[in-house]
Image (cartoon, rainbow, N blue to C red; front, side, top):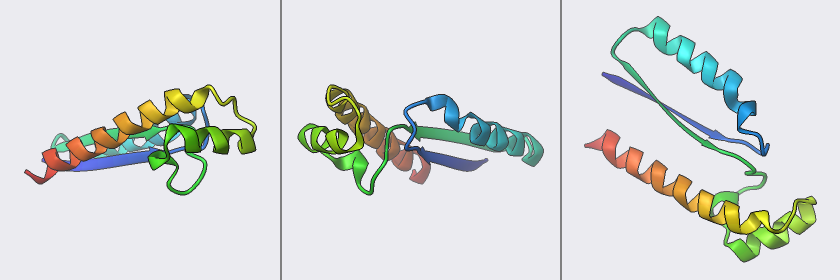
Length: 96
């Protein structure tokens, strides 16, 4: 079995914006055969370098500058932590 890992870091807040890329890789998976496993990890509202590792307070400051509601900082900080954990778990799974 071959594994394809699709990591999508999007500046957009809408997960649907990633659908064309996911559709393309799903099509490629079908073309390449049965022994292909596609792993998709998708993050939204990732607008700047190292955005995913920023604290809630750092995100509040950033969101103020970007014109985003600051209340999203708490939600995004937790979501980003979960996203990093998912990446870490997938990495462990694929290397064992």
